[in-house]
Image (cartoon, rainbow, N blue to C red; front, side):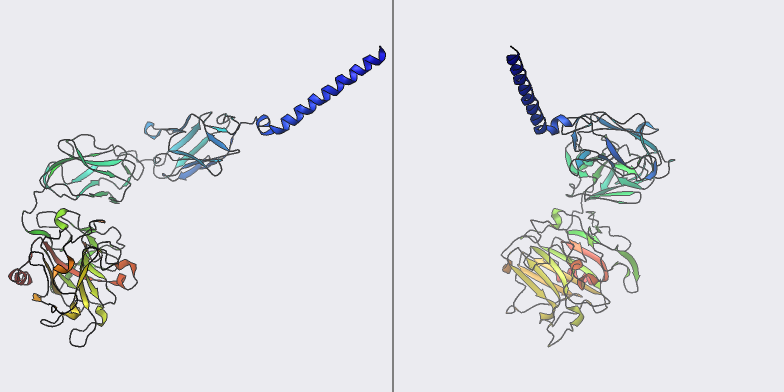
Length: 518
């Protein structure tokens, strides 16, 4: 009996050892799951707790000790006034987790100026890969900071002027603007223009390219012009506009605070008339006011010229754009004419654009352009090989070019960069399929046996604007707005313009003569 008892004991001990060994191996295989019982916690806050002067547009950034993913709950931001409180759901687009899952970035609305803030993190807003939840901030830990700026400004910006004014009956069709009682900045939201019946005709994101701010003035360029003689009203989302301290403009939510009727239009063949005396306003009746070009690096200025009085000066880097409208999108059958005065005191090389609506980066690009061409070495007369200046017309495949240095009747055209004022007239006569070009009231033509004649049949029809890109009609640039700026030589174009006129008709010789004497 004794021998049997010992044998049983040994079997029992061996079996126990094997079971224990199996458990050890099993635990080793699942070590990550069984061993991770530590809840994730925050190792750093940005801005650092207790800091002052935090930028009003700052993000909040948390760094965790472990890889985490979003859970549920809120990030609550409070200050000493109710309008400064923000509650952000961790699963909203305002919260992102990046950098291998350890860094959380919170994008709140802009802070108010000069306020004391506290941030509270709900338990469970994140969890690690093992499912352990964030327990929240310890009782002895707080996240506080002070925003930059003057704490005294708690007042929302107020409208000082609406352009057009409320109930205006002669409003422009291509732009609107607001002047406030203080400097403003964009927030988030939209400005919407409605027809009087309630249909939205333009929706503009305030953070987009069509909104510009200069001090207290917010300007909106409409991508598509409004109808002539139409009734409209404007609404603005709460928070779309803020003052510099971060106070929200409450917006406009009704259909009576800002309503207007657009101009009935000129009703004549004169589409644009820019006197260019003190501004770039259009007095044709269509209110196609020009604005500083979107990519201009220098503003225009208005100066007094001894010969012509008040004129516009385009320095290197400046140009202007007319609004987009069907009246400025000539079809392949539409007659139109352009007339303007120009002076350049310093001639430059290359072929910078003076005005046009095409991309001058390619001579077959659809539309038209009038450009200087080798003016620094152009001397009108026999034996000169330079073009001096050129007009290019294209329909996207075919092109034709009128060149000042190749005209033979009555001779070569004058150099537009000789320091004198010149009146230039371009007539597109689709009815008779002719391009006619005048300098100082005199027509300069090329014989029909020369390449690039004035016969518009060369183009086989086709609209005289870029139907794909729909470029603006620009002054002191091509339609793209970047051609002159793209060259060290072309970008030096500097000069003056006066009395720019655009007609949707072919001007006659008598009409051009009359313009010369105005």
